[in-house]
Length: 484
Ligand SMILES: [Zn+2]
Ligand SMILES: [Zn+2]
Image (cartoon, rainbow, N blue to C red; front, side):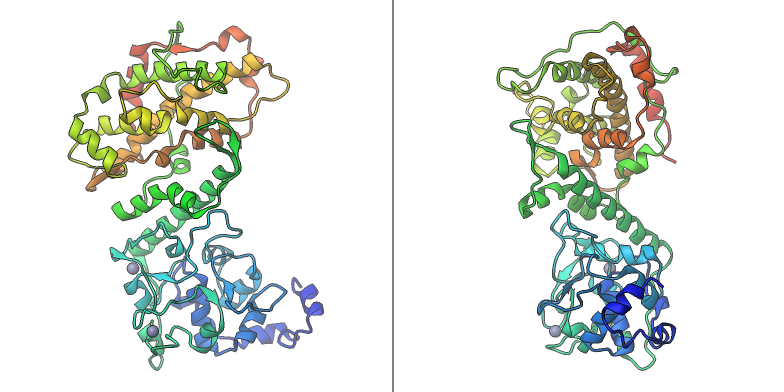
């Protein structure tokens, strides 16, 4: 019934007897692996059914069904009819979604040429997330992803176009068969299973989560120089910068590091819990940037930064003062990667936390650390929930301070979890984007807002300092909590 409108619209010879028409096609879902790309799925479908490009596009595209000369982009889902793809290929709606890079593009650095792992391709597997340029290596075969025909290096377009219909999975120039088994008589593909399939699933989810999140975060971006909101940058250099941590994760680890939502789902109780540390008298923060140079960072920001500095003192104290200079300069040189045997897990946790909240300059350049506001904090503030009209400004500041204390603790715990994940490998990766404070705030903004705090009398809100011993006890206890 869902096709009624469409059928009227375009005189569908193929679809007059729909059930029979669909049955005319051979789909081999058992040849495919979950998470396989639409390029691979449609290539196999084309190979089994020998359709013309016109027939193929009539089957899978949304109107208008004309194909431009350079083909229909297979990175994005919005030109294809998802229900019909599901019926034709006999796959679930999830498999249809994961076969594309995105529904509507946010980040722009997925390739328009096929990026593939040679061994995976030979086995008849290709994943949509291989198309992202920040994925540089296949985690199953530890091989660099490649471009161009394995026989003659001619570019393979990542689109639905003439060659896919006429020469599915074969090079139109040199005749190289990309999936040799499929071209044999009674040839078939064996899907990837077991542990390998699980690793592919983890990467698929990690990339999907990260790309969606980065696209969303970029909608509300803070310019680090001016502190103003700026329009999302869509250029390629910005995309590459924003995905550097994904590229490094893909280089260094066979399974992706845990994501913020995964960790938040199983974090220990926040520090404002009755069993957590008790409030103490407020203490002034140690030092801060010069407000003359940063006039748009307001009094509220200074109060929040003061909370941040108190926390830094109480939780990390001298940790970073004891890190040796060679380790430090290695870290600064090597894109936040450092050998796991060079530093202790406590130091790594502290460095990650500092990078997240204070930014690179203020963490690494200890002489001039007074020069910038805590940039991670400005991101956190930008993504925190908006003040409801019914709540006064000062009260809302208190609410923000309570949330900040909670997130400062959560962030330290997240870094400790990340470091535990990385420790068995050769390198720690301390890229601040692995645990952005902005994401903690964005996560809170996505939760239903509770009015409980604002309903309480104001004197209960002024939890501006928490005693050092209580913090350290609490910190030690949450760090010991296992990941699973
Ligand atoms: Zn591979
Ligand atoms: Zn070729």
